Structure formats: structure tokens, C-alpha cells
Length: 238
Image (cartoon, rainbow, N blue to C red; front, side, top):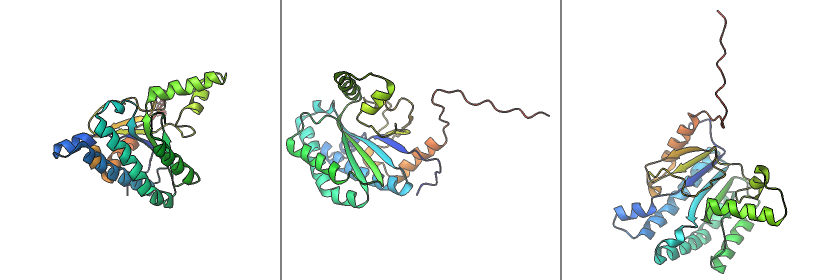
């Protein structure tokens, strides 16, 4: 278990590197995505044991539809199968599931599986697991603003915060991206305005509890000021 005492309350992860992990082993890209599911299970358990209450992961972006048809259909089926297989165990551990993103274009049976999982785990409190699927940060902002405008509501920072798909969760304290890429890739653009960023060279299928602890240690070493200046050090008279 991590010895870190200053823990984030909300960790967000861009799970990058599944395809490269598979290619390095001369395997189909889908094999990397399957190993990525195992890595996610490991990180979920690590968050539970460390007392991190909210985990948000980027599983499938709205831009991922442009990938090869076989890979996209495999990813959709992988989500469907993994959720059906793991739901009982997740529910038994007190994990609440939420799926953030547009349901437009998803197969009706997959939408039913997502909704049923959310409903079944709604009262759980051990860990909030937000899975961003068919999600994009720009879509999130535009969708929230459009719904506020349609309702005749004033658009303010507070009303936007409440309308975005991550609500009512607080903004992520720590954003981790694996795979040695240093960009947000349209993930939680509004919500990560003041998140601490940690970029890991490790490909997602190899990311484990020890790697998570490295990220948590880096987070604990930082001073978060949210745009404010560092307090002046008091001078003690001689």
C-alpha cells in the first residue's frame, strides 16, 4: 500500500498505450486493449486500498470512431463483455459506475448494459468509477452550454460546472497519462484547469499499483496554489 499521506481525492487517467503494447509483442491491437482491462482492474483495487474515492478513466474518445472498423467493433464488444463479467464483483466491492459521454451511435443493447450497471450500483459509496466512453472534452462543454441555453438558464462557471457530465464530482486533483504522450487529447478540458499533471512512460497494460504510487508520490510533493501566489515566509525578528 502507498505510504503517501497527501492523497488526491479524485484521480483521472488517460489510459494510453494499449496498441503500442500489442505491436511490440507482434499481437493484434485488440490484445493490448484486453490487457488494458486487466490493468484497469489492478488500478481500481489500488485506489480502493489507498482510500481514493473517485477514479475517472478515458476509455474511448469521440475521435476513436476514426480507427479501423475491426478495432472499434472489438472495443465496443470488449466493453460489453467486460462489464457483464465484472459487474457483480464491482458491485460487491461497493463501486459505483458512471458512464460519461454521448450514447448517440451506440448499439441499443450496449446502452441498456451501461444504464443497467449505473442503476444497479447507484447507491454504492466505496469508490466512484467514471468511465468516459464516446467522450470528448469539447463535446462536453458544448453539450452543457446548449442544454443551459435551451433551458433559458444563465451560463456561468457555477452553472457550467453543474451541467457538465462529471458533475457532481469535484474536479480531478491529479491527471495521469500513460504511454509517454504529453497532451490532454480532448479529455476533461474544463475540469482539469488546475489538475496536477503526471506523465508516465509506461504503456497502460504495464501500469500497476507501483506505478500509481509513483504518480501519487509526485502529487504529494507538489504545492497546489490554484493561481495564487505562494505565501510569504514570515521573518522572525533577531
